[in-house]
Image (cartoon, rainbow, N blue to C red; front, side):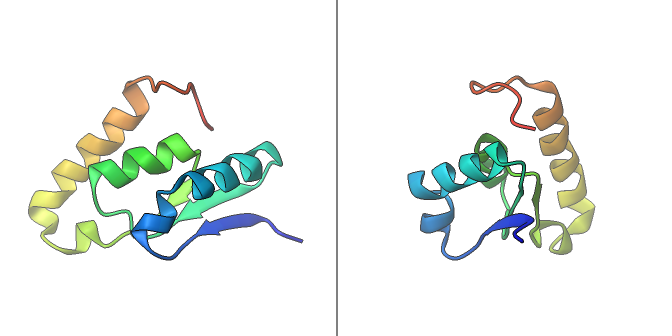
Length: 89
C-alpha cells in the first residue's frame, strides 16, 4: 500500500508539470505528498502550489541565526497569503 508520494530527484523534475500532475493525483486519492531539498522561498511556494503536505531541506542548518527569521517569515506567508489555486491541504 502506498501512503506517501515522494517527489525526489533533480530540481528540474520536482518542479515540472509532470511532478505537479502526480502530486495533484496523489492528493485526490488522499495520499500525503513530500518533496525534498526545499531550501528557498520559491521552492516552498512551489511545494505549496503542488499540494505537498510536507517538505524538508537544509536551509536552516546553514546560518540559523539569520535563516530562522527568514524561514519563519516564509511559513507565515504560506499561512496568511491566499494562493491562486485555493487551499491545497
